[in-house]
Each structure stands twice: as structure tokens, then as C-alpha cells.
Image (tube, rainbow, N blue to C red):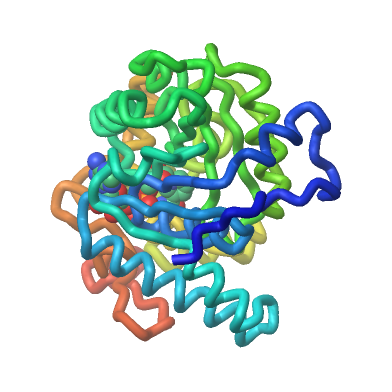
Length: 327
Ligand SMILES: NC(=O)c1ccc[n+]([C@@H]2O[C@H](COP(=O)([O-])OP(=O)(O)OC[C@H]3O[C@@H](n4cnc5c(N)ncnc54)[C@H](O)[C@@H]3O)[C@@H](O)[C@H]2O)c1
């Protein structure tokens, strides 16, 4: 592994706030907790931007898969001439994998937690991080919906706990939704804002309410599409086609749900439902059933569509293939 000894942030980099520049210069080691869909993308972007990345997961198989995915995604960048082969090798060399959290975070300047969307799990992880990380370490979470204030309250450093919500796929999507917990220090928000710009992203700062902005708006849309399917208003293909061609969405809501992960969608709906106490956010029964039966979408091989490794064809899952207008 190439341990980056030089400062990754270039002083002349445009658009970086003067006051946080010196803090950014000290930021060298970034630990990413969880190496699933989001963790591998976040590690990819940080490694490509010059940071030493410690990628940690409880499952060695998830780490191996993440390293392979990052390599494959960088190969695609090389074939499109957006990355040189040499830069790819250097970036891959900056990533080290760990299954031991204490080891992975002992020198971290910034931790980004991207483990499974589950409140109890996140609280446990943040309690462990708070104990194992140096005092100066900023603890960010990529959570899609869970309260940053609540997560921070389980640590002795709530001022250094913040939401840094990347979008999927991380190397491609420009947005970082930054979520201020009630106790987050303004200097930490500014630092994460400038860091996001340094990564080539567009940061937007929001306050800590259930689902923030992105999922408060997106998830009820997805849930409504699932309710429409459940009620037999239209089939999978019709619902997605109407939203793609009628509303110019790049992907239909059911395909997007598969892509995000139905387990993640279900968790977010539950957070909205509990957080606002409003029945309009109740997750669709069909979504609950699919998650309970282990149909998580693309990552499990079947959701509203079926996914065959190596194939890009979009095939509606057999159980949803009956056209409702023929029923
Ligand atoms: N999937 C999306 O489109 C998306 C988008 C934005 C944000 N998010 C958020 O990102 C986070 C991760 O989502 P994902 O889609 O990558 O999930 P995922 O299921 O693909 O990956 C989660 C990973 O966390 C690991 N993990 C579980 N417990 C752990 C622990 N104690 N320590 C370390 N690793 C642990 C799992 O082994 C798994 O590899 C969630 O909070 C989710 O809400 C997801």
C-alpha cells in the first residue's frame, strides 16, 4: 500500500474556505465503515482524490468484493480516458482493508460510516468509534434517514458528528447532502462542505429532520409506486415507463428501488413513519413482504426485476409479469 505522506489537499485548490483550509490540509486518513454498495463507491472517490483509505467491514467477502468492484469501475474510467492506468494503480494502492474496527480507525482523521441502515447498529458503531478514534477525528455517517442528532448523542463528541450523504453510484453522482445535527459544530460543517467540493462534488447543507430532503421526497414517491403496483393499478413496466417517459426520470421508481436496495427503502420508510408519526409514510405491505422474504433488489438478484450477473437486460421478475390489464 502507498501510505500518502504528503498532504492530499492542494493549497491553491479553488473554492476552499480560507478558515478551514488548514484543517483540510491535515486530513490524510479516511476510514470507511461498511464496504457494500455505498462503502466501495466512497472509498473509490477518496482514494482517487489522494487520501489513504482504510476500508472496514465485518465480512471479509464484502471487502474482497468491494476491492474488485472498485478495480472494475476504475477500469471503466481508464477505458473512457478519464483516468490513467498509472493513476488507477496508485489509487488502488491507497486502499487497505480491515475487519477489525479499532485497527482501522486508530489513525483516522475522518470516518465515514456506510454500514447497513439500522438505527441500533449505527448507535453501536458510533459508540465504538467514539472510544477507538483519536480525539480530533470527525465522525460522518452516510445514513439515508437516521437522525444525526440521535447518533451524535451516543458519543462524547456530538459536535464532530455529521451526515455526509453520498448518492449511488458515488463516483458518478455529483451531490453530497450534508446534514447538520443539532449539536454539529459550524467548523465541522464548513470542513465537510469544502472537502466535498475538493472531491469534485456539489454539497448542499440541510437540517436534521427525518429523511432530510432527498429521502423525504424520494422515498414516498417510490412507496407510492409500490402501492400502485400492489393495488393492481398498473404493472411494473407500465409504472416505470410512465415515470421515465412522462416525467423525464432517468430511471423508473421501481427500478430505482431495486437499485437502492429494498431493505434500505423499507428502513427509510419506517424512519419517516416513526419520525413524523403520520400514516402517509407507512411502508407498502408489498415492500415489507418482499424485504421479509429476502428479495432486496439488484444486490440479492431479484426485486421488481431479476438480475443476472453479466447481463444488462432489464427483465421484470416473473411474479410481476402478468399485465394487470389482462387480469
Ligand atoms: N444504496 C443506496 O443507494 C444508498 C444511497 C445513499 C445512502 N445509503 C446509505 O448508505 C449506508 C450503506 O448502504 P448500502 O446500500 O451500501 O448497504 P449494503 O447492504 O450494500 O452494505 C452494508 C455493508 O455494511 C456492512 N456492515 C454491517 N454491519 C457492520 C459493522 N458493524 N461494521 C462494519 N460493516 C458492517 C455489511 O457487511 C455490508 O457489507 C446505509 O446507511 C444506507 O442508508 C445507501
